[in-house]
Structure formats: C-alpha cells, structure tokens
Image (cartoon, rainbow, N blue to C red):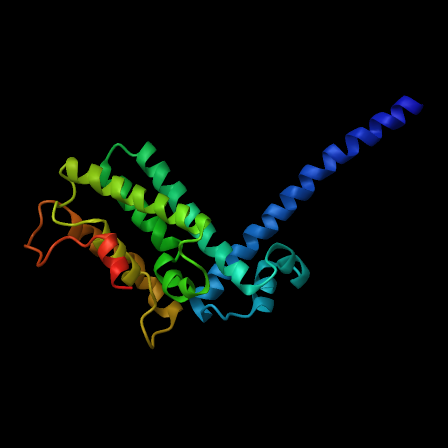
Length: 221
C-alpha cells in the first residue's frame, strides 16, 4: 500500500501541471487576441476590463499575465510580429511560386492588423528593446527575402524595395480618419489585392523617385 500511495503522489503532479500550463497559455493567447482587436478599434487606451471580458477571463487573470497596460501593449506587438514572421517562414518553405509566397506574407500582415497597431502603440515601448528589435529585424529580413526571390524569378517588378511594401501595407491596413474601423475592414482585402497586382512584373508604368528603404523611413521618424 505504501508504494502505491507514493507512486500516486509522484504521478498526479506530472499529470496536472501540463494541463495548468496549457490553460495558462490559452488564457494568455485569448487576452492577446482580444487586446489586439480592442487596440485597433479603440486605441492604446482601450478598457482593460473590456479586454478581459472579451477574452473570457477575469481581471485577475489578465493582470497575472500582464501587470500593467504597457506590458500588455508590448505583449501584443511581440505576439503579432512573431506570428507574422512564422507565417512568412512557412510561406517561403511551402510555396514554389515566389509571388504566392509574397502574397501569403502580405495577407498575414493584413490579418494581424499590423498597419493599425504600429502607429498607435509604438509610443508606449522602446522599439530598440532587445525583444522588440529582434522580432522587427526578423520580419524585415523575411520581407526582404520574399521580395528578393520574387524579383529574381521575374514575378515582381525590380523598381520597388522593402520600404515600399512596408509603407503601402501600413497605410492600407490602417483605419481611415473619420471612418469606423469595422466599416472600412470589408474593403481592406480588396485594396491589398489591388496593391499586389501593382507589384507584378513587368510594371505598367515608371515609378517616380527610387525604391524606399527602411533606413530612410527611420530617419524621417
């Protein structure tokens, strides 16, 4: 009897702990997704109580994962950039057609609301903080590789750069001033596809100026 009891005591924590960790991970994901949507609609000052309700968790659970608003903002931005990077890597690995890989990446960024989130949240954390910098550098490198491959394959015009894609995507996925986010959302996919069609080679017109670079964009901020 003594050995059986001992065995039970050893097994039970091993069975329960992974479930607890899985529940915590699911709660964290729900909070991040709810916060992302709330920030897009209401800005960085969206109600944390409402975010918790939308996520289906209590306030205590939200604060256990994210002690304050800034930590939640940081968590959303990191989660969004990580998901975009992962989807870009899968597109590069899975798609033989280089333009289709680029298309998958662009729509991933659209679905993650990157254009709406970056402008309103960037002032709340240090963009050069190591975790944020690493995530941003990863996404930028993948964007460059997607464009480079598509250009080498003759699928994308050669007179555009990473900065061009970044700027246009940011603008297209950002709510327009004075227009409700939900009302404009239904047109975003249509406009992003129009943009992608404009990237195809050969170009139908000569673009003025030169391809935008990320370095130039940062100098102007």
